[in-house]
Image (cartoon, rainbow, N blue to C red; front, side):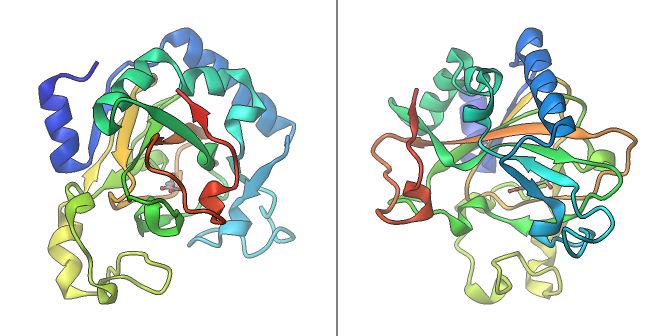
Length: 250
Ligand SMILES: O=C(O)CCC(=O)C(=O)O
């Protein structure tokens, strides 16, 4: 379980890392499933070209256009993912952050991010909640490091404490990315923290926390399974994409 300091860190910074939380057998099982499905291009997949982030191939037909960015529907794809995402060590910590009853939202994340060296893109500063629809903007994601994650292979960066800030619309662009051209945002951008992760680490972060990541300039594919959770009483809005798939109760 998280100790008091870790819970306080999550409350103030919007993220906390549980070092070495993932057992080696579970890490190896997820990695094997992810490598297998990437090699076999097992659907459902999302391609770099679909995202159109900076550095992505312009279309699926362009060179690199079939570079997979996400293995979608991880929980349904292989029990390795579902088991890790719902393990007691994860569920217990989520209860500490969200409340006594929690559910995994299959409609969001629930994927393996596959950041590939040859055609990887940049993810600009954003909050995951921007396209999610719940009664309260209070969800937590768990990001599993299957290998080393650092700036050189497109590891995450965060802006600590931003989950507590209300942003005026002018500070964001039309797609709700934080504008890097505004003087008003500079001190916040200067506060960025690189989230270095080792194999088996799990990062828990708030859905309102601004985060970003660069391209993968290493020689190896980075595989990062990520799952999102809500308190049981924080329901998705009827008819929204968030309500589109059944949740998994932990
Ligand atoms: O690995 C990355 O580029 C970050 C992905 C991300 O933040 C997201 O998909 O919400």
